[in-house]
Image: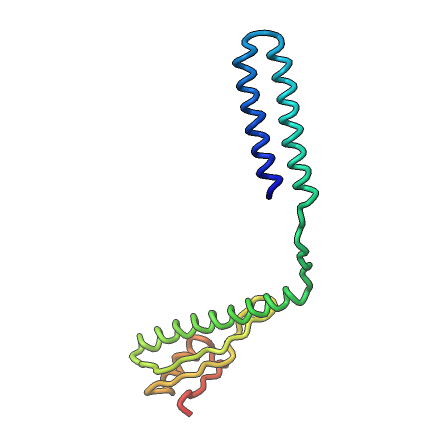
Length: 153
């Protein structure tokens, strides 16, 4: 940090020297040559600061990712996808049952998502005043092979 402060001070001093030289030298040939020399000194000092900073720059050691890191992320993503899909299907079923006049206290949908992306609804758990009628509506929506379980028992 001290090097950076001293370099900034040097740049300011050289810039001030260039301005003073311009005022003193006026339009002579000496002015152009003196400005060139001072600009070269300025460029050399800036390059020295940059190269010194590059040499002392420490790059942190970042561990490379392993396959297990990605598999954990995929498992979390898949679990969240299953949970979210189950909630969405439950809300759709709740809307269908409500439209049929059946109020539900609880409706949970167990979902499995296969590797090819297909969704399998393995089981629906319901709690309502008329579980049999609700089960029929759910089976008519999802298929007769869908397992509908009474959540009260």
